[in-house]
Image (cartoon, rainbow, N blue to C red; front, top):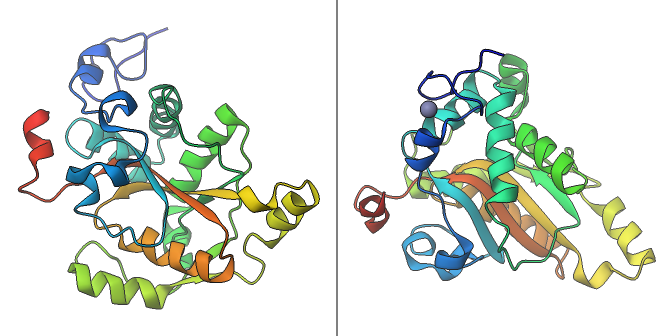
Length: 237
Ligand SMILES: [Zn+2]
């Protein structure tokens, strides 16, 4: 087999070579804790009033950013698998409870029509294979044509409020099934996305979920976090 690293193209028996892997800033449950909402350099920069915990694989800096870019724009299933594999295996020390269902952040229908896949769903599919947690792909919808990344934090909040909606059934079926198993009071979801920047999107959707299901526990799982330019996190890479 003639394999090369997805990031540097040097020969490598693994999809990402160990030199590239060594260059990546991974969050570490033993150093930063399992819930990054209790870790200031992350929590201080993201909206998080409506979800309970935050888990991030690593910083959105090179070469990790390149892997996310491949997942997002070139439909690289291998990149998706590498990210979700790391997410599962580098977080062995994680102390959070295992969620009942994975909820990928939706992309809009027009983007789905042009991109043909949702990168958050791809991540969920690999994680689901590893951990055996089911995925609900129809829990929420994203409407309209707008993209978030040009917008200021406040504009993002207004935009997110307008474009994201829970679907009619949302996670009713999962909750009903859990209640019949007497597991209804500890029902936990993991909202999954590729990149976290301001946290506005996950926070808005978490707010909607808690309005509809007040006892729900919400974890947020993302592959990468983009800190603001002056973040102390950049010095540690
Ligand atoms: Zn490499």
